[in-house]
Image 1 (cartoon, rainbow, N blue to C red):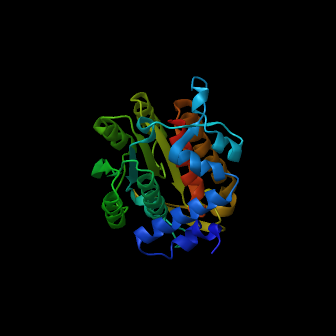
Image 2: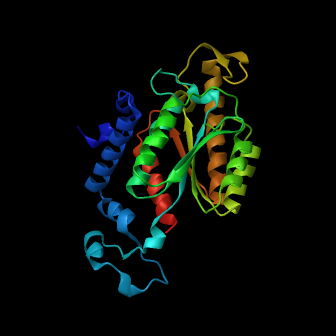
Image 3: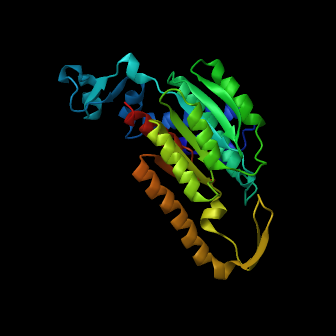
Length: 297
């Protein structure tokens, strides 16, 4: 099977067990790294980091330079580990799917499970936090192999049902954190942006790193509808009827602006913003995790 297939949501969806699904995605991803121009990339994340000014040139690994044409130094043990929190939005809107394939929530859970595998493989402690209007459950970070089972068994039982208060939940999480951490937030962000952005800024001011996986359904991004259409707000159940054809351009403009606003805010705040939709391969998101991990070194 080609590496591409490992990373396609419609293929991954057919694997019902979350642990097998996560292994499948990570295996394809790592195979792709080894087979790509990034072949030096996977070396870097295990034992090396890029040479930066201030490093001792004596620490440069010339074998890696010969392979990649880039300067790397060996990482010291203290530099290598990063504590990660997978943070899942349980809001009802995350349960939406247009084509009845992967919901936004299924996509988020598949991605979180794969990241959990990847982090434990790197011996990084990883934990899980879930929220709707407030934090609902948490698994404290650990780096042992048994942690994969702990995180995945909770992920597999989750259901997106509630209303959400993203800003309050992020503030709660920020107050829980004792050490500098990497927070990986999975959400469609379908709520008032202003308080959310304020809470993201507070996390960064607390010294934590963050990757914001902004997950929308492919139909929310592409708006494939025509004719009269009834739209329903999944959390308030309010309905309205619109002429989809006449509404399309205005809608697409609004979605573009919505994502651009988050991208701008995240760049200013130093947060990695990853816009995803449920038709996209998982490798984009996993690469962002590795890039973010590198930035911390």
